[in-house]
Image (cartoon, rainbow, N blue to C red; front, top):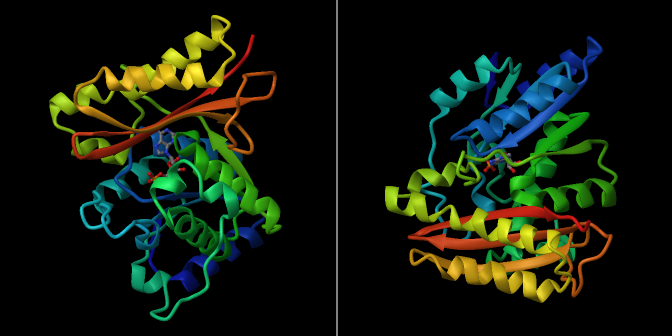
Length: 283
Ligand code: AMP
């Protein structure tokens, strides 16, 4: 497995793989890898002949008050995990390599980028779209793998690939969870043991929504209200949003129907901001 920091070297390595007729997959990550990331790598391995993983904590998708500096980084451990997964190439650039000091052009995620996470984290999805576009244009993958854990991100990347005619197939992978339902996240290391216990409230609120819908509730406001109540029952958790939206447009819905819907929740547990989501299916 190769580790490269230079865009040019990545281009050359991928071009070489292509010359050999290989199908190329990209898995973008911010490192501090866990089983959730590795599930994307394994899906990529299944469907491609040459797997590139990027490890880059992208400064432009963090707000000024957010945890860019504190974000966990452990490239040596990440390399060990990726080596064991049979990854071909790790692209681990520095911010200075990724961005020219006078870089000014960015990708606008459009209305999908202004709701939910985008409403709480202004600029986040523009930063994400810009870095993902750059990664696509550096690695030129046939396939790119993203987790449903970041459902809005996945939705926006799909829309971006379609709307900008990017020649890449975007593949979503299911959320990997701990036994008690907590979605794996690099930020879970911030949680104290008490907070770690309380953090299961996000998944519990999603399960509450799922159960209500399975039991016949069709009023989206009632379902979202029940999610909010569940989070409110946990003393250490503070809700940011609980929403029931159309799974494709991310627009709020009033009633659940045959169209796919998604429940999304964001909350702070202690100082740590966590997000999660689940599909809501009628019938
Ligand atoms: P991150 O390193 O947090 O930017 O995540 C990199 C990729 O891994 C994104 O596509 C995430 O959606 C995905 N991912 C993160 N956590 C999980 C998880 N628990 N299950 C599945 N995919 C995940």
